[in-house]
Image (cartoon, rainbow, N blue to C red; front, side, top):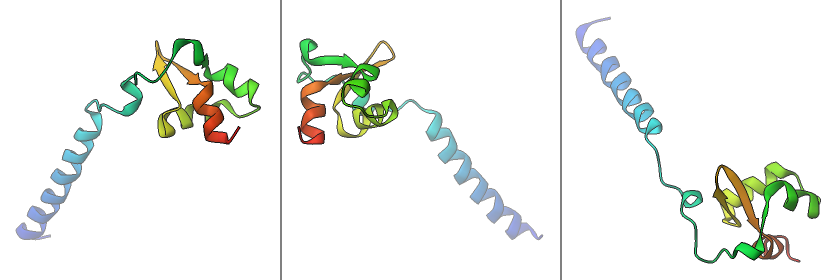
Length: 90
């Protein structure tokens, strides 16, 4: 391997390292921002929503993140029953 090939390899590795470091940085996602649209009287824990609607709890949590049907409080997902019903067409 000659010097120019080593320089090219180093550049590739430095770019990859920069991308990996960026992944470590905390990112603000919609899950961290609590929308004002969530009413406390409409929220249930993810496991309760999963049982009530006969769905997998993982699916409920995924929908909370992806479709904003819930909010995370204290490390737990709270699901809006109204938004979940709208999502599944009930």
